[in-house]
Image (cartoon, rainbow, N blue to C red; front, side, top):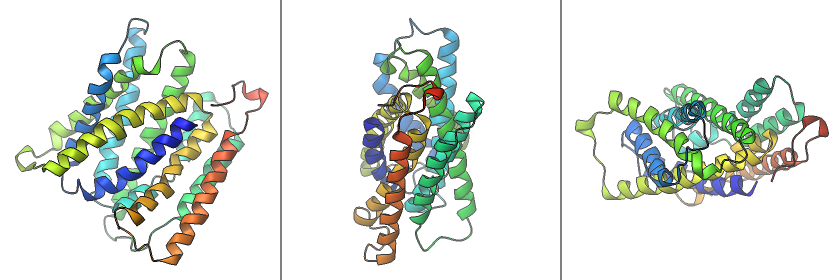
Length: 295
């Protein structure tokens, strides 16, 4: 659970950073560069000797979905939404995590779904005013596609890693980022207007930070934590970033009026519900589930 908590803190600042510093930079280029940086960091640790070729291809495919497709949709959503709404519209990701896990296991786990729905309720309470009209539904749809892709990838990797416990995360993680980079690069080659692409010095710094820390270190720790967690905890932590991202918007990027008492009350109540969901998901699974207590 510690890994998921650390990454939630790291990612909380990414929403505001993308929405402010990287405004105007082509989203497909941003996605490709971030995942390329992550690949560059973990490529030296790649060891495929003990991984079957079919599993290598499977991990590349997981990465293409979890990282590549997710980033393409997620970063594009900033063209239609302010950063606090991008964070807010991730609220359904926990439900996707639980439902995808149960579908893969051909079973239904009410407690995990309840934990996910509780975290959705908490995040939904933290809603911002001033919702833009017009393109909001395009942004919402993009965020749901991103949530589905991210949920599928992390659940699939979690299941695969539990079937291959002797393979270290850092020895196979580059396969995931390679898949993500290739997926994002295809979109970039097709849709990026290279003649209009301009990146300032501050934007290059933001891209390097997001690529190396938020994407590289963040995704690695997240998937490592996912492999150690049960689906309920994993689902709830997918929403733990929402109150943190809103706090970042309030006090760091000044996107929301922090003197608004109603906004602060919603934040406190929503954060409390999400914390309850995390605790609920962290409880020991029953013996019938046949899984160890998560760490």
